[in-house]
Image (cartoon, rainbow, N blue to C red):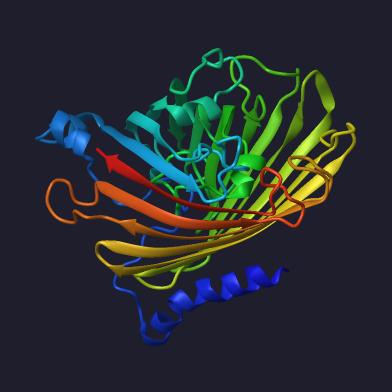
Amino acid sequence: MSNRLKVAAAAAASLCFASFAQAEEPSYLPDLSTPYNLVDTSPRQVQLLTKLVDPSDSFYRSTGIEFSGLVEMGYTYNFDNPATRQNAFRVFDLQDNRGVFNQLELSIERVVDYRKNTFDIGGKVELMYGEDARFIHANGIFDYQSGRDQFDPVQFYGDITIPVLGGMRLRVGKFVNLVGYESINPTADFIGFYSRSFVFGSGYPFTHLGVLATFDPVKNVTVTGGVTRGDEQGFKDMNDAVSFLGSVNWVINKKMALYISNSTGPEQPGNNSDYRTTWDATLYYQANEKCKLAVNAYYLYDNAGSPDGGSGSLYAFAGLASYQMCKEATLKVRAEWLHDHDGLRTPEGTDLYELTVGLDITPVTKGMLANSIIIRPELRYDFSDSGAFNGEKQQFTAAFDVIFRF
């Protein structure tokens, strides 16, 4: 491993060492049964939009339906001044030296708890407008648009719980990808940054259309599996085959959870036989009420994905840490290494490294707007010995985004 990543890993770990020595049993631990929002069993947090639409909470008590939304805007400055005015290997922070209206997101949702082992019906509709939407369109679903700001129905699915195997949830529709530790929603990650990882834009699919089943075979283990039309495939499909999507989440103890996910299927146009498979494993650790750690490993194999049409592989490793310095500010670090051995997403044999340091600033911590405003400044250094960043070996950016949750 590169010396840069060794130093970064040591720096990330050192954020939490002092608190390890003092901590006994933390006074508060967030729910680790769903680090990627696979099955949300955390205590209900009433959003501002629900409070405005249903101030007495009577509609929720009678229907279980809630409303929520967010607005995100950001800005990135690249100190290397790329001629393309774009930041290489970025997604939602692609544009250099320009303000970005990332997304306006609105959701209506009824959460169901399959662990009650009864019949119930729920679902979610999540709509997005903004520049982020143009990157995540599924095939045949509003993918005809042009321009910066676009519309996308990120998710629309129905849930039904049935009393089998101790409780099971069936999900049918369009839903976000299960693979990985990052998400489209900027507030959904265990440790999140404005700039996403290399692998977020180079390896992960964003959404799927299909059917999933979720249940707990034993205590503290959640299994999800099903079939989809493939990566980013919607009402249209690039071939005639289906793909598998699944995950296993093991809550090891109060502080730790291991999440393993897989997506496998033919993902080439007009090709039903050459398979692509992605494996992802993330270990989440909540040391105490202030400190979080996560490590991730990712592997992609594509039987027909290399530039010459042959097989190829890609892998990546990442480490993340955060430490809450006070109620208003949390310090975060992310280090990543991606190796594209066969040129699946980059020039053949490319190694990409990045180190990102940032803050989560929540200026309002009390009252109706408590924790609704999040400001996330960051500094990021990218490096490659192959000149992958617009012909340069490095890329240094400063960025921030502002999120208002309602």
